[in-house]
Image (cartoon, rainbow, N blue to C red):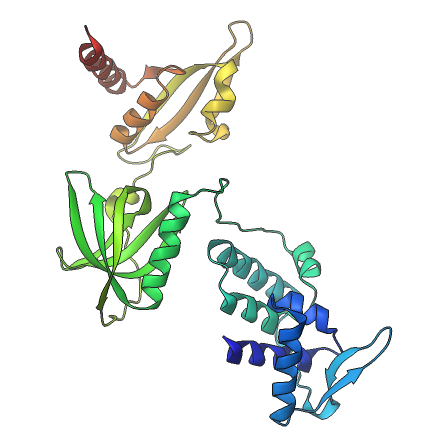
Amino acid sequence: MKIQRLIGLLCVLADVDKITVQELADRFEVSKRTIFRDLDTLSLAGIPIISYPGIGGGISVIEGYKINKKILSTDDTSKIFTALKGLKSINNDISVNNLMAKLMPEREDDIFSQSEFAIDFSAWFEDSVTHDKADSLHKAICNNHCVSLEYVSKNSREIRIVEPYKLIFKQSDWYLYAYCRKRNDFRLFKLRRIVSHEVLADIFERQKITSINLEREYAKDLFSKHCRNGSVKVILEYDVKDEFELTKKIDASFFSNIDSQLDTGQICFYTSNLSSISNLVFEMLDKVRVISPPELYNDIVNRVKKVNVFYKG
């Protein structure tokens, strides 16, 4: 919005000695012509803007209008920049660009070089179904619009009318945190389980939420290096040639006990969610063999028998 950009321009001009129109255009991701119009608007509003022509010139405001905004350390600025870049990777919202420009008058590449982290939530692939869902649901959240979800749950596929509140990125998946009118409670909906959705005209009144409680199923330890109450030790054997592919499913730190003569290795970890591990092992059935525990081995064998019956004849 123009008013946000004007405020952003004021903040930048108040924090620097001078800056070029091209730098302002790059920072706010607009054209130079738009910046010139914005500067004219500020001048008409009584802001004393000075133009310095020639090499080394630029735009500034007179000294009396400058303010000291040095309340953030370099480390503070770097962390805020990293978080904002992460938000920008989801949705290139102009308000995020304006906020970055207001808070960080320094050059973006200078701040980037100071940060120890880089956050990017965008997909590797250009055609990302999940990204499209997130973008649509984000707009519904911002406008307080109810959403109709066709959702695949553990027990069924059904239509849910929800009031969307937040998009949550947890570990490696996106979730929608929403109030479900059928359950009369807040629920997490994994975006990958949404078959289709429709943003409705119905507008809801937001409830105040102070925290988000993840359901217990999300709190179970899938992989751990340490034995805890209720956990069991899992040992899988694999062929070393498949090691790279297996790291797409399991962290490489759990890989050990390489037998160089047989070209085999073992994956060892503790889990409190054996049913989920069974599903995971079944996905990698041509690459791993269960050594222990026996109940996991037996479950996989039974599932293989069912597959053989399914494809028999």
